[in-house]
Each structure stands twice: as C-alpha cells, then as structure tokens.
Image (cartoon, rainbow, N blue to C red):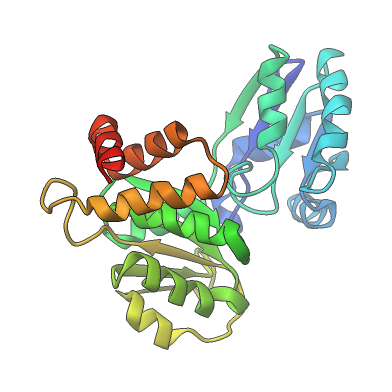
Length: 276
C-alpha cells in the first residue's frame, strides 16, 4: 500500500484474538519507516508471528517527553511512522496522546488505522445506554483518587474504568461507596479463550472479586434516576465546591466544573453558594 510521507499512523492492534488484527493495520506496519511501541518486546513478537519486519523504537510513559523531538524531526524529514500500544487502540489509556498533540501543533499529518478497543468492546456487551465517559485507571490512592471518584459520583450516566486484578476489590468498594449500588458489567479476557462477562450490582461485585489473571474493564451503569427526574441536592454541590476551593482551585472554576458535571445552572449554583 502507498503511505503518505511525514505522517504519523495511529495503528490499532488486537486486544486478544489475533484474528481481529486487520490486514490494513498489518500492511501499514510493514511499510512504515519506524514503529513506536509501548513495549518493543511485545510488539516485536506480535509482528514476528505475523511475518512483519519492523524497525522498533520504544515510546512509553517514562520516555515520551524525550522521544517527541526525535519523532518530530523524522516526520519533518518525510518519514512515515506508526504508533502502537501493547494491545488495542493507542492513546486511549496507553502512551501516545502527547505525541499526537505535538504532531498537530507542528501542523504535520495524523492518520488512524482503527482496531479493537477494550473500553468500547465492554460497553457494547453491557446493554447500558449512551452516553458514557471513559475514566481509565483510577489513581492508586490519596487526594487524586478521591478527586476522580468525586467527579465520577457527579456523572449520572455510564462510566468505564480499567483495573488490574490485585486492585479490583478495593476499586469495587470505592465505586460502591462513591456512586451507590449501581448495575455494573465486569469484562475479563475479552476476545480470548477464557473471555468472561459478568453483570450484577456493585455490591455483588464487592463479594465476587477474586484474584485472577488479566486486566478488567468495569462498566458502571447509569444512576437509577437521571437529572431532571429528581431534585438536585444543592447542599452536596455547595459542599463539593467548597472542598475544591480548599484544595486550591479558583472559586469560579470550581463552580463551573461542578455545575457542568451535574447538569445544573452555573448561576443557580453561584447564588446558592453566596446565600450559604
């Protein structure tokens, strides 16, 4: 196939089943001048098994900033470069977003060769309605984790989380405490021989969790009542704004963020804060 020089190709790879790897994606990796890989050993083995010869360079969470200038220089010189992650679509929860942004800032070209995504695959199996928000991996602990859980609690629709086996039980408890006992879909080993989908409540999930291999996708269903069907808990929102301000956020920014997250009028929230 004919590739455009000076273009970054964002290429999807299988999340499990190798038959899901598109011929177009394989052809691009065969033809590009360089493949940026999250783990060169994983991508090298994947390409070797498919008979694809590639020139690999690592790009992961710890070297992205150092790699970007080199990649931009190569693109400006007319090279075609592919970006992949260990599995699935790059930049969704894996490294690469900063590179794609840098390529756009340099007014260079980006092209996407789509492939499987664990988040979208799990959502398709859930039966839950749109919209959804993808949260990725929760921060492990501390104020950063509390901040994300607080934001997720204000989102009444579907939320998608990634988690590892050793942290799943803690995450299930934290989600249940923050979001309430919502319906949830748990997905594991998707597209593989031991693929598992389980649906129940967050309370049941807290009891079900066992240490198994493979990463999980947790799809939390919408709140039982949507905005507009229940009265807004203004005291909760005012308290949340106060917490965010105490953590260093400007009051207007905190009001704007909480109002947007909870689908309420920013002016109404502002007035209630000043009344309090």
